[in-house]
Length: 148
Image (cartoon, rainbow, N blue to C red; front, top):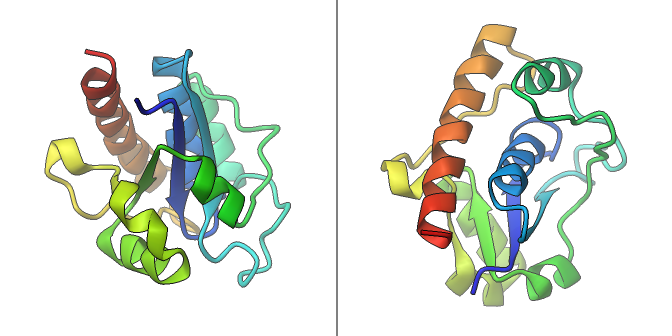
């Protein structure tokens, strides 16, 4: 049912690459990718994952070294069965950009009752660890719902 999952955030260099990597690890038979809503506007298209993100992700078993930030596209939206966002503002932005995406978009923290997963960009490694711990719990909850 949810074979193709797209995880989104703002720039696609911190939260969504890690969350997608964790979901892919938990659900290897699914296709999970990530994109950003303002990647091009922020000048991040093609950028590597944030260095702190890479370091923390590596300690948690997720390799982000090959990741390159990409702007969300109509093709990504069309090919996704489920789109997971980090907060309600991102869902609203996505819905304005791609109205047909709204019916298949939910919060990444939905099953934990979390409506906002903060952006750790340019914050300390401790903040990244806290955010990634939330992403891990949320990814596990999604995996349990999708593959009971």
